[in-house]
Image 1 (cartoon, helix red, strand yellow):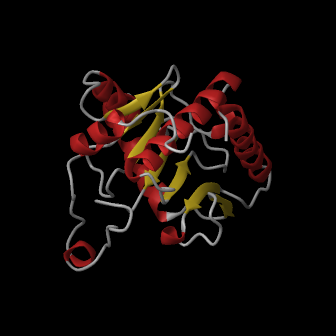
Image 2 (tube, rainbow, N blue to C red):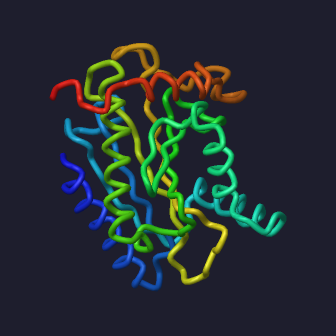
Length: 227
């Protein structure tokens, strides 16, 4: 898909978020996308879903609490400050960026080649994106997924999910809209990471450093290997 074609998908995500938020019983809109049989997708193309729930899911609730606590303690946004730290060292963990978004392998990454997509401007949800930012989000998604495919020259499996503020009407000023890519492939197109043993009962283990993963992704061509 071209950037403009992906931008129409971003517009649909924003529209559906706003439409679902109009229902008084819906408090959270979770947009996610699975790609590849390895991630449970029955279709070969990326498979997107939107789940709207009365409750705020566990992962979103933990992130929301952490960001609110940070804002109360420091008077600033946690992810804004984190992004500033990464931008101060652009050759460390940043994979690709444009005028409005940055893709970075976070230092706490658990999945191999995990990336975090952050807007440069502080905003809370998809509907808050300007037209230029929506196009820029489409551009950064294409840039990241192209590098994923180029890594092992296969359609790269992943889970992509957006975290945005709840839809129950409270401001949640500390919430910074962002997206996570969780890809399972580790050393080749066939070898994946499994959460087993110590990782399930102790704590997840990092198979390669964030800096190594970012460097490998950053070095890949921006042109898709099939083009």
